[in-house]
Length: 517
Ligand code: BG6
Image 1: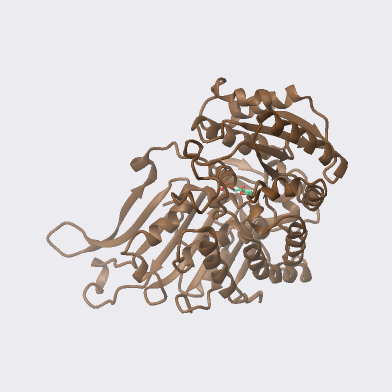
Image 2: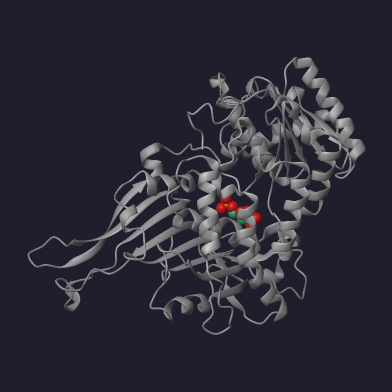
């Protein structure tokens, strides 16, 4: 989070125009990849439009295959034209004129040393210390090689003697495939960088509404007193997508919904919903509280019957009235695939605040619509006054934090239907982001890239945090591997997922909210 405390971040002092960002060289590894075009370059461009980049900002693309500087510069222009939320202003994007492309192996210390020479020449030309940001957006198989070569070439330690952190590494997901590989990657990173230099991305944390979760909880006095086991019946977290795996079948089949979405994005939503108030807004205080929640989650019951985990895969169906293929017919999916495209979990947090309150979470592809939301469902009011007959429809109160796409907050309360007799009906109190604040909010990657430049790691995942989450997820993965494809349910594309996930809630007298309604 950007803070006005200029002592907290060395870079903020006296540099308010660019919110304290020193001259910056950003190297993107995986420069010709999809993420660079769709998200990274448009985000950098939008920061430039808002005058949030330093006056001296240099972009370097790094990749294995050769490319002319000119072609890379044009790639950035095309990326902005196609994917930016605001149109290209060529004047602003003159930044591209000094961008260059460097090709070499990802683990090649020689190539990295040559790159470093060029960067030092840029620094000399400026006559000032620059900070280096290494954005790793490659396939995960080369994460370790890149980190190692950054260390060996000296770039990881750039200007370390100057006493400030002038070299940072931003790492895209997936951060490991299980606990062991995440721990190994953390070890490799710790061999070359200090934790303060490391920015592990979970782009959900860059979303406005995800940041708003902390504001809703801790800037309002009315919710916090009832945010606990005394008043909350259960919590539901839904991250649903209507898209299928598209052209990412190769990657996705190695991953599946549990690794791709639950381990990171939905776990982060859970941590922010359930954490204790941090002592301050500084990065470590917030991340300490998130880690505590993750560590307090009790191991899941993995039994096939009455268990806490459901997994499923979509078959063919209809999305917005159009026929779509099933997962097994998607491009690049092996015939013997047993990968899940949907997962639902029932979790309990063993601490004073939440003991006994179920947290349900679900995420899947090809569901009825794209919607992410958190539902906090409160206990029923005592049925003393308004309980008899069908005149009263006294529903439990709930608070729905709508993450996307219709961002906002809804509180469901009971109200009297106007008329001469007393009848009740649940009604909504609604706050919509777009109606209140307009619709042109920054994209997650704008926030995250800016934060990495100013040195604020609040919205990034700390090493122990990723391990805490994997510690919970890995036994599920191992269990699935051990019992092959048993337990893999089917659901129709365009539905709300498998019946088994409904049943998991019915068994406990709960029901999934009709998300997005
Ligand atoms: C990514 C997953 O992390 O998040 C994708 O790898 C998924 O499979 C995407 O589609 C969803 O992000 P968003 O911002 O569109 O909700």
